[in-house]
Length: 229
Image (cartoon, rainbow, N blue to C red):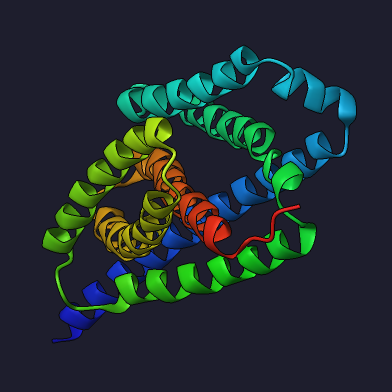
């Protein structure tokens, strides 16, 4: 009984330390993205470089996707330092592309939506961490919903339907709310399966996962709640 209690305490300590690193890295990434986005938005010269031609902006988007893909596919073979650099690089690239929201929306609505996103994210992440229910089946449904969301977004790029845009926005909020809980539980389980260098790199990948959940939730909420200039 005593050994069981010690084992349980050690497991909780390991999980707690791992998740602390995950949230710390995620917070740092959000800070970097926010600072870069505001800096770019405050410079007419930088805005003209980023948004002056569609090729530059699309190139940045492709670079973001490339960094995520490479980091996800090669993380087991990368050093912790390289994984960290790529994670920070992705945060910077996201900041550059997200500077566009300061052109489209008022600063007050961006700030209020950010705090709403933070509150929603915190509640769902805590729910995913503390729930005893296995969310793997629920996560699979959310992933299928995400695929449908991507397809609908591509279709609406050509249709330009305002009604479909609202449906996509509401669906996006629900999907990323659900993924936040699912991904948090997945990371909690992962914490007990990794150690040493792999645990360090796992915390980077976990932070990237939750970072993406947060950013996408924020953007879909902004489409619904943001006041356009």
